Image 1 (tube, rainbow, N blue to C red):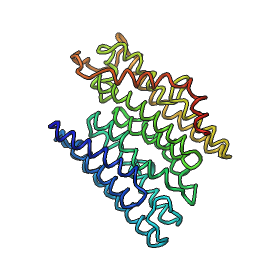
Image 2: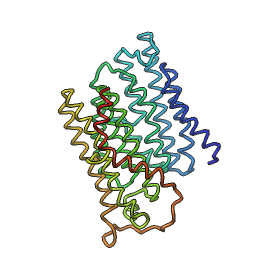
Image 3: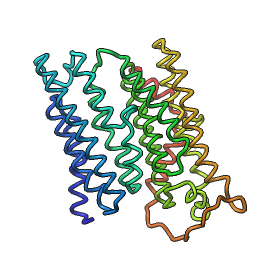
Image 4: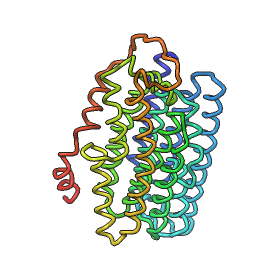
Length: 348
């Protein structure tokens, strides 16, 4: 792809998200989301591979459905209450419809089925944009809505943590595993959204850092399935020893960064007298932890002579810059000691 076209598309992505961030009117927010969708579609289809084209078509259809539902719900809200402002959502019907539309946009269960299929058809760089940047605009809208019925967010959050855990158990494709990991993390964010929006933002930020590290590791190793990951020790031994720690941070194990948001979310849910919800969420994290451990086992504990049945690929030098990866790995592994400072900032 020409660098000028790429720059234009990335500018469109940034502009769409910024418009949604800055908007207080539903039509402007919808326009930003549409610009976002239209800017990423050429990036997704740039490989001209049938799988990429199929993934792009699926993504376009789901995003168009969600955008149409959002527009319909905001028009209904204007009809019922006379308000177009995002902050003025008072009627339960359009509020619920908008929450479902935004859940479809980011891939929350039970409207998550498109996400693993779409991510599987993309290359790792576009998959990274889809898993991180594309979540920002819908989250900015979710943070501004005050749902009249809090049960819907808890139901969506619990369903997502459970589906994200169960769905990834049987997968061998890394991109599908990362898609289910994304669904589970989004579930944690949605659970605590109405009680502590700042905590949701913290969880989103740590998820971005950890996902960025994971995608860059897979990209450096040119790995798309577990067998390719198992032979990565020959290419980058130092990185192979760090990757299990990155994966366990994604799973939320102490003393790694990923433990911080889960710890604070469970604490917040307990404060809100939602101990059963907190218990279910914590148990669903064990499901996710299982498939992260599976990847860690394949990567670090199957070195020669106990390797998996996979042919070792050519050890060609990678042209990828390792500075972003090094920075994100440090953030992925070592931010837990900052928890007291973070929790103090959250209570301000």
